[in-house]
Image (cartoon, rainbow, N blue to C red; front, side, top):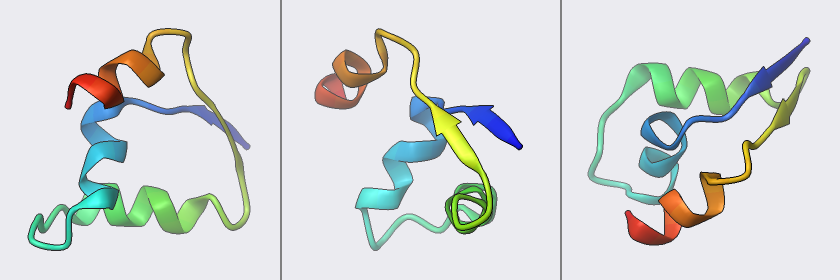
Length: 48
């Protein structure tokens, strides 16, 4: 399975005080799946 990363899901991975069950489950999914990042993803992460 391949999915597209979104900043609203990936940004919580970097902050311990954010409790986002969906973001954490998507991170766990990367153990068995592949992910693609759209071109503006890196800029959005830097902005976050």
